[in-house]
Length: 391
Image 1 (cartoon, rainbow, N blue to C red):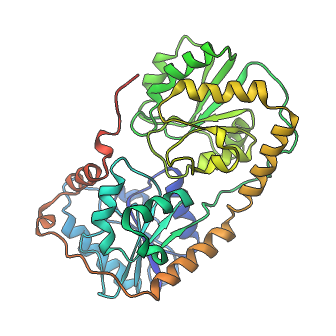
Image 2 (image 1 turned 30 degrees about the vertical axis):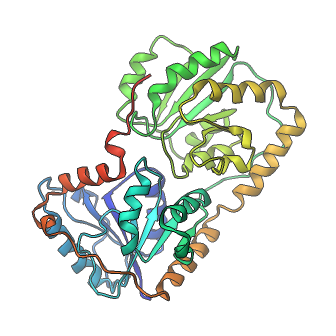
Image 3 (image 1 turned 60 degrees about the vertical axis):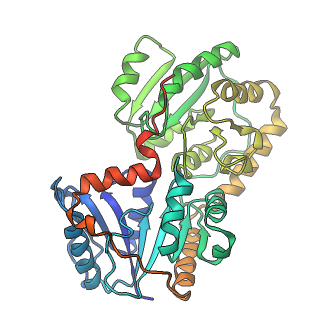
């Protein structure tokens, strides 16, 4: 099998997905983004050995069919025989330069409408790559166990300066709790912070909460907690400054409605923080390998606060030492070398399997602008209504 092209909705895309794509870009693997800003184009060679990011265009009314034709032309010049479709974006749009081309779905996230969305897509997908074992299990339960040889779990790679310290953290008040990621209401549900803070107060926990990141909900949250000295906003940090903030945190908090496996989760644990994480996959999420008691029912802020209260009152030196040893062992799996070894083996395995059915693009796609295709895709995944009620 020849080289693969990585297909994304837009470039840059931010978060862990962009970090992974850039690692592949560094390896010389080209990227095609259906939308993006032309001034962010990186390189423009496909035959000279230089990696390149190609955009379908930034004009809002570009038609899907035109972008798909451009994609096929770019990929044909790249001698493309396989495509890695990030979160399935672009599948079924007529983006195949050759009939034998393999189509691999790369799942970076779960979705509210995951089962229905994946069942419609699965018959036309040659392979599936998943961020974690829990997502692989959910994929297999959705499409049936007969596809097990086509579905793979990859160790999400992270850059870690040093392994977590083995000694217990010093007892300091207030307890520092942090959130790292996109500052938004949809999916991340940071509108739940008020209920979480109230639950911490009811549990008698003296806390400081720090928010690391940017997003469309940042102005609203700044206004909401402007008079609360316990809430600190760092904005966007990177490099040494980012790691310095993480190292101050004793706990790392998530209150999302759905996730794949956040890079910030692994980075926070590497810095020594204890994750407080929603139970998305019936006890199978990554933090459960550290301690099953770190998962709480989605949306239950009292249960999230109880995790911190229990750790503060019941974890002795032996519990902290066990947590740190498990963290070191688990993070050792998430290296660049392990990731690319698993990725290459999965793609090679798919290449030797018979191709699945080819999906013809719907006739209406030739008349559909990209913005409408984006909206329809969100509806299929159930993310168009993922904000939920504010609390």
